[in-house]
Image (tube, rainbow, N blue to C red):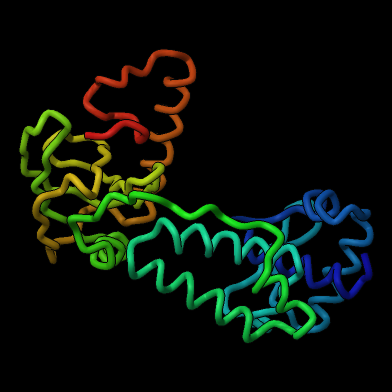
Length: 249
């Protein structure tokens, strides 16, 4: 790998890191020596890249550092297009339109020699079939997730039992032809998963839930990991009222 490309990749790795990234980790990913990483970090700092940290602790790229938005490698283009194809076939209508727009924007922005990778990619996501319709506005669901606001749901389960819930939405999931809303249910006082096609009414409340969205999301990830571990160990019961994120309420 040429040094200029390695400097660019260091910035990319630091960008995606959620915390300090050590020189060891950088060296492993870039298949080079720690000494080279130290020199590269010094060179980037000398070029006014806002990198904080030190040897033995790790490095962090400060917020607000701008790079050309579409300096994409061929593999990154293939990944972006494949992901956008999947969303176009399985996302709600607003996300599907956004995914198709994204593909068009990438095709316009990349150099001519890379455009065939957008228009005729090596991989292709298979089209979805018989997607279940959403009975809730998914644009407003995503807005509530980002804003940390509650949603009041009327929900009908597999046995056609109806219940009213107030949910703190965490994320939207996808399983085959179904979309799922995951969140903390005030009625059950636990995390629950709701199929969007079984929601019969929804009110988007102005009331915020008491936890910050990031903290609630971290709790849900721990919950989800524990439930998956139980399922792998054979301890999860698919009739246990949908506690696992793979099971529906």
